[in-house]
Image 1: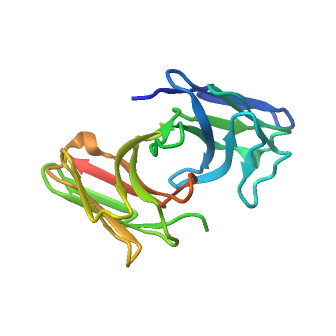
Image 2: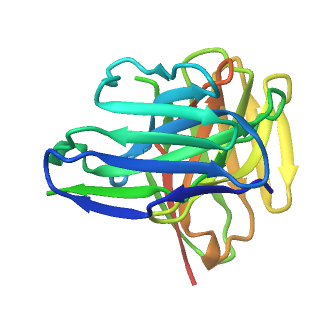
Image 3: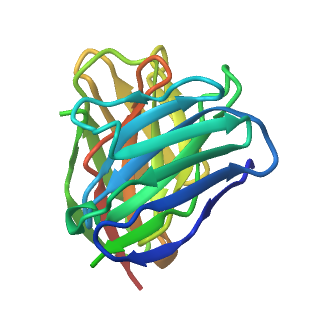
Length: 116
Length: 109
């Protein structure tokens, strides 16, 4: 199956700093990528949908200026958590869909963000 | 809420038994999918059922879909300890995917 690589797996940062998370599709071109946030023992909350070459579509309640998403190529999307605060600590997972007809999501392994 | 509801929230069974988990959703869908997540990891796709299908099988997995009730069920037969994980249903609404609350399954050897 298709492989999605997410990096880093774990990051600890100080409050006020910015953190960038990368999501790469290794063996396919991902026209659409999704970013999710997951709290312990809870479900995935869709944060935003990013399409290559266009602005991301954010879900209601997600701050665009806080969570910057860039999808500059068909194999790379990045999520930058700007001026991180302890409440931003969470598990962030990216996923990608191949082409338009493919209905399966392929997930990265996730990034655990801890803001001190 | 963008989430559907799943029940039970947690399920503990003996190895060899069957596990059934249910998912309800709120809006019309194109398809419904089930995913598995091991602790602290990404999700793995298990099975997809389209809105015009009622039942689908894949190995030890059996999925049903009732669009009139907006519900789906996942049955895992002859469970194994390695099936221990969280299971989520996800609904596809126009190329956006929303996940249910999940069922945490523990299979006791």
